[in-house]
Image (cartoon, rainbow, N blue to C red):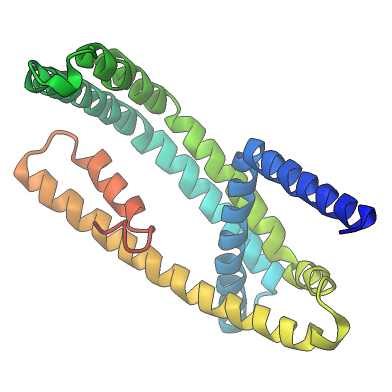
Length: 245
């Protein structure tokens, strides 16, 4: 191996590591941007379909959809925010109590076992499952409910921004492909976007049904935190395979 080749390999490895660190520290921004791109696919398809049905220009229809989504998000935060915060706080207390019981049971089970004779299992488990730590983390989540809605507004901004002129970004991405393959890449991107849009619509319907039926069932069973559990069940349905489980 020549010195020049070794230098190129070393530089490439350093660049990959640096990119990995940059992506890790900016993971929140990347996730929000990715979520905005997914929303843009849905908004573009919806605005185009409604524009064809109503003869309203697509950008005007996109603005109507964006305003409707923003008002719906604000209304949801105003009406369901306090209830959601209260129920998450109740869930935190239940998790803390269950964690305390589980920690004591595991510690008592390990007493007298030679494998753990030199380990303070109760102290070790307490570091990972302390009621105070779980309650603090869950309470932090409860206090950041409105932060979640703020993230929703950011995602909506990216979605509207991308959906306003998606062809510009698609053409920019196609330039990264060799010229002889650009037509195939362009067709593949449009077909992928159409399939992804249909999948997102199906997932939205599935999540709504799961969350709705879960809430109805828990409500009639008298579960006090039915709303937050149903909301979690609905959002978990977005994850393929693992979500429904």
